[in-house]
Image (cartoon, rainbow, N blue to C red; front, side, top):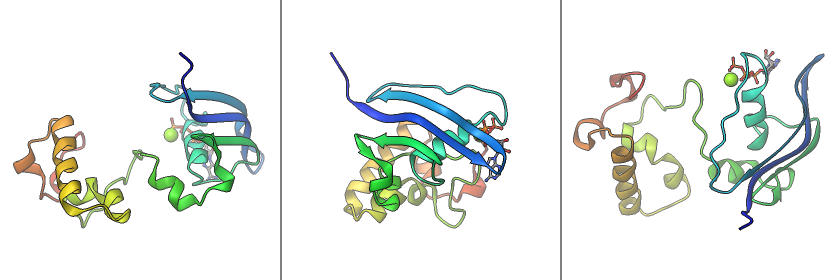
Length: 145
Ligand SMILES: Nc1ncnc2c1ncn2[C@@H]1O[C@H](COP(=O)(O)OP(=O)(O)OP(=O)(O)O)[C@@H](O)[C@H]1O
Ligand SMILES: [Mg+2]
């Protein structure tokens, strides 16, 4: 059964000055597919990801997310429908664990009760005890937590 494309790169290139960080990359990722991008330090993995939600803009080529050219989509709306776990600095230090997890649906205006239910489901998914962790600040977590 043919599956829908979630993210597609077609001949994408991105340079920083004279350094070509992403060089003519074409890649299709199907909905539901689990894909690992593997490569040496500095080989362009993070740059490739940042192009998909327009944290940076490609020099050439086309990137589509769920069939839409990312250049034609409002970047803020685009980012709110792409989950992205940063290598560092991914948590708001002044917000509790629960508020960090719920930040995107909060910004999208979801009902508080729905957000609370989903936060609990996700804490369970990553095996963090709900009562012990929900209201903590990120500074009170270990790296892995
Ligand atoms: N904003 C920038 N300005 C200049 N050079 C950059 C910028 N961002 C990345 N680079 C350079 O582009 C290349 C690719 O960087 P990138 O962060 O994509 O690598 P990576 O594969 O994610 O590496 P790592 O495994 O270390 O995280 C590196 O040489 C890096 O120094
Ligand atoms: Mg990286």
